[in-house]
Length: 329
Image (cartoon, rainbow, N blue to C red):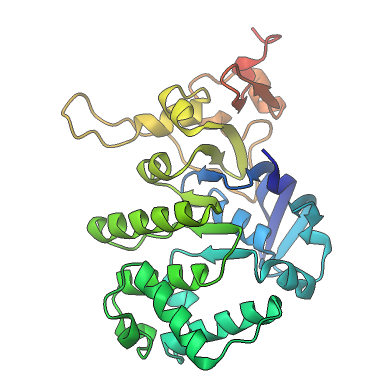
């Protein structure tokens, strides 16, 4: 499968008063054409930093990119000007973030904001759309998200809408133009379970209909299982395991992935959930070697000395753990 996005050995830090927070430690991932990929990990592990690095919207400073590449269609966006990145992405990439109130401008109506996006997309493709055509396209995409009375919603300000309605507006804004890549960062985090399910089902339908590539960021394993084909597991700024979603969650290899699955609340009464002892490390002074070793029940002396490299698995997945090296006993 041809790669649309490749992140190679990306390392990112944030300069703060106390020193340098080394958040991403040489992560690599790939998104193929038309592929749905998940990125899973605890809160604070670097998922959103990864998305913002791909989008080239990290504020610099305080962010510092120490090394690596972010390739979109073979072009390294980290070496491009922000203007050039905008020209590259404006008709190809869309993003949905977890807080719609931050994503929407409170002083403009939904219709004004969405019309600006449509006009910008049209300009990037050399098209000129009339006001009626812009309005029709905006209403159509709002209706596709299951929004009731989309014409009235176009006249509303974000503060007048519920959380679920605001998130539907954000999804409609992301999909108002035909994009190749959708970056969805916790798109339903602040919504109740019923609304989450409705929005995710509708998002799934739209992605399937348009055959888009997707990077879905989530700490909800159920959402990732339902919506992705392949998944990366992230811990403390490192990728520790990757593989086909069904295979990885049914037979996890990395101790962190195993612990993550054991911590899922059980509803059947058969045993209790087991949390992973300890907490995510301090990025000011992260552990040497494997960043998970202070919490790992299989820790060896080598784990504290040497960062594990990836080992290829028979299942076509990969795991970064010394347990799977043939030369370690």
